[in-house]
Image 1 (cartoon, rainbow, N blue to C red):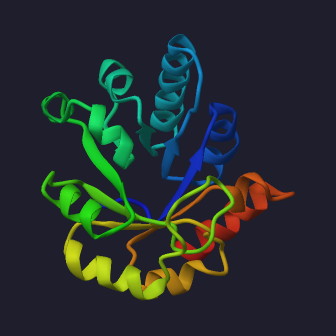
Image 2: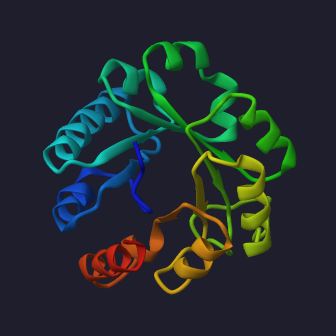
Length: 198
């Protein structure tokens, strides 16, 4: 299965209701600091919405809830990996995407046989405080050489305008958050993303 080259990340299913009808085919639900019942309800809703629109849902972090809901994909950050039960995730048939930021993290992740590897932040990002500065396009090229056939996701400071250069550097997929969610016209922005990535 080939993943779509445009990979937006949203923190609520309200965004999925708005964006999936526009043609989004790969989306991550990244919920932060909500009660378990809310998380599970959001995952179930997101899964139903994605199935209705023929889109791939990736659940961030909440691997047990994703297993329980019968999801297909999970994304884990490095800190999430410390607590996750990888054998249980694999036994449930979940595909696994993982964040990486440096050499040690990449080596750790490659040993897990991930289904995609994310590198970030490629550009400066306002989304969250990070100890890593921007990785830059040469790093994208290096990471793609090292991951080989595993899909490489570029994330961090992404915009429609920057996407072509990130693809040219070697990324298979580009992920965006604030370029959409903070845009005064998110629907138009998503249409522009779809146009530049397909």
